[in-house]
Image (cartoon, rainbow over all chains, first blue to last red; front, side, top):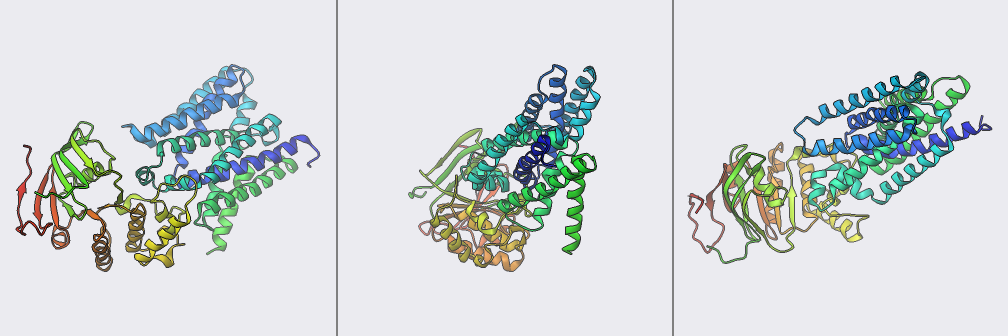
Length: 261
Length: 229
C-alpha cells in the first residue's frame, strides 16, 4: 500500500502526530487540562470556518483561534472572576458556532465540514508534513531539554513559582504548543476525535509507569500503533481512520485493564 | 527589645485581596533562631501572613524587610498537590531547587541526604501518592529544605496525620530548629505552647500571646496587643 504517495504522507503524518500527541497529551493529562484541550480543539473550528469563507488556508485560521483561545484560558484561569470551566465551555461553543456560521455562508461546504469534524488522514500533503515536523520537533526537543522545569511547573505551579521558575512564561509556552499540536492533529483525525489521541495513550501508559518522561515515549508508541491500525483500516476497508484509531485505543485500554486485574 | 538582627520583619502591615482587608496592623519579627507558631481562627489571616512572608502577596501598606539573600523553605498545606501525578519522591524533593536543565550531582546527593534524615531514602523511587500521609509530609519537608533555608515556614504540617507521624514531624522540627528559624501555622494552640517559643494569634491583626523566646528576657507569659502606634 506504500507505493502511493498519499499513503506515504499519511504514514509520516501518523508518526509526527503520534510524537505530538505523546508529548503534548502527557502534559495535558498529568496537568488535568483535558477540558482545556477540548476547548482549544473546538474553538479552533471558528478559525477554520472564517478562513474557509475567505478562501485562506483553514489551518492558518485554526492556528490563530487555537492559540488565542489557549492564551485566553490561561489568563482566565489566573485572574478572572468567571469560573474557568464555564469560560472554557463558552469559548468551546462560541468557536464552534462561529465556524458553523461561516461554513454555512460558503457554497459547497458540506464535504469539507465532514473532513474537519472527522479528519481526513489520506489528504495529508507534503506541506502539512513539514509543518507537523517542525511542531513535533520543537515540542519533543523542548520537553526533553527542559524536562525538569516542565515537570516541576506541571506538578505544582505555585511551588515552582516560589523556587524561582518563570511559571507564567512556561505555562504560556505549553499552551501555545498545545494549540499548535492539536491543530495539526485535527487534519488527520478531526475535531471530534482528536482528543482521543491526546488522552487514551497517556491513560494506558499511566498504567505502566509513574515517570513522566517514560510516559512521553510510551504514549507516543501507543498512539503510533493505533494510528497505523487506523491507516490500514482506512486503506483496506474504507473506514474513517480517526474513528478506527479512537476505537482501537479504547479497546486496547479496556483489554489491558482487564488483563492486569 | 532584642538587639539581634532579625532575618524577617513585618511592620504595621495591612493586606488583603481586592477590596477585602484581611489583616491590619500586623507585625512579626523573626530572628535566626525563632520558633514562632501562628495560631488563630480560620479566615483570621494566618495564610495571608505566610503569603506575605513568602512574597506571594504584596501588602497594601506597611513594610516587610528580609535579610539579604535569605532562603525561605516552605511546606504548604497537604491538600495542595495532585497525588496521582507521575512523579517520584526523589523528584519531588529535587523540585525544591530552581532548576533550568538538569540537577547537579551535589543536588541529587543532597536530596538523598535529606531523605535519609527523614528516613525515606528507601522510598526515593516511589510515586509520591504511594506514600502514607505522614511519609508524604516528610517528603515535602525535604523539598522545603532543598534550598538550605534560614527560615522554614510550615502551613498546618500535621493536618490529617496520626499521632505518631505528628510526633515524628515535631522531632524533626526541633532538630531543624538548631540551624534555622521556624514559623509554623497551627490550629492547635495547646500543643504549640510547649513547642514554639513565641505564639502569635492572628485574627485580623496579630496579638503576641506568649514569648519565652529569649533567655535574656525572663520568661513571663505576656499577652500584649500590638496596636498601631
